[in-house]
Length: 288
Image 1 (spheres, one colour):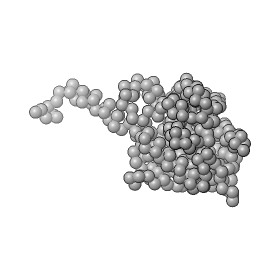
Image 2 (cartoon, rainbow, N blue to C red):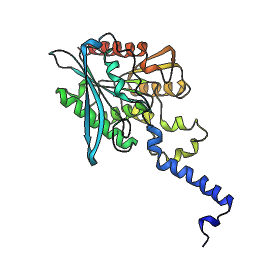
Image 3 (tube, one colour):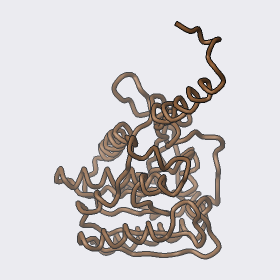
Image 4 (tube, rainbow, N blue to C red):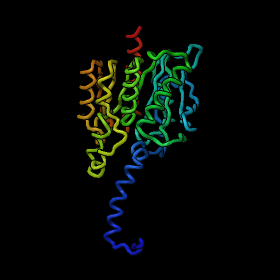
């Protein structure tokens, strides 16, 4: 039997060629959800002085703890609504208290880092992160004694896929959410990967497809879609295909494309945060 040192150069090259796809398949959860490099703060909004943020932890099976932030209006009146935020790839959600300053005064904002991001433990995957999302929603609603109908979801990029999966699952369980806001939404992670020549061959082994097109069939709620003017990561055609699927399912969809923005910058721009806050304000008025 030849020793490793006896292998010919071409054999080493072949082993490397086979090992790379195998490693990508095994490590895909971490590759897809990314890592948190920096916390990108932004304009805290006009209501920042009336908000209070606290660090919170969500306990999950297997000893996994998820790091999060809960931002609530200051005052005696408890929040009447909960907005659950899902970040994009590499996003550290410690910035979300800034977003809370743009939201209506009756709305609490809750966000957790995905598994392995920030100080969160565990290993990310679609199944794990969607289960975590459902647990986060239950935790947040219980914190304020709110009914399922008080839950609103918002996600950016990769997070739109998690939000859509959670919304579809809750709808199937008879606990539909009040609304969903999608910022630069993808129709599926598989569709995004197919645009990358290096990653396209791995799509048959993708364990976290985040198929928002399939999830859209279960939704019948108000949906806000915000698109960047320039988006090289999620083409507008992908997002508009998702919009059409939501409309066919019976959801009322509002779409805005914001000038001077790109895929990475959109969510943290004052214009986008103002759109989200204003839309939630209209949603509350319509529900009364």
